Length: 173
Image (cartoon, rainbow, N blue to C red; front, side, top):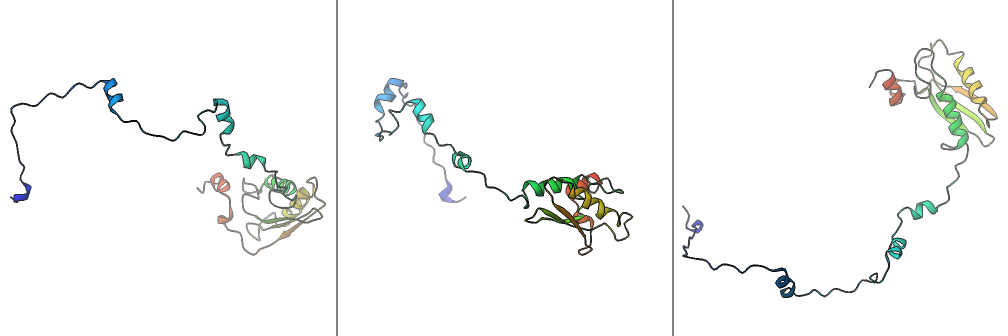
């Protein structure tokens, strides 16, 4: 064994009993810390509550920014998207928006709606009637002057374009 690791043991006959601690002795013996006075010491509780920072104050004071009706988040755009979500594919129990058939919705300055869409396959049985139905439905949205549906095949539709809700409905998740 190494010499450095030796433990020294000292035997004693008795140990002096420590004095009993008293609260009064502890307070008197302890030196007082010097603390700078708080500028709020004379403040009432109500004043302290008024002074406390409201973290939402700046956010709540801002005036809401107006989103143009034709942009995402605008009232007219959202109304058109809601209408598209109410149209269901006749073969699949999912709406065409969540199915990923809608590639884009554009609202012009004159409040004309242009919808770019595709179908699951060019041989879809509703290939002739679906664009016309969508045009009628979108055209009936209050505020839309004219609706136009462009049927596109590029990029081709695939199941990855579906929303998670649609995949869940079809048991794909």
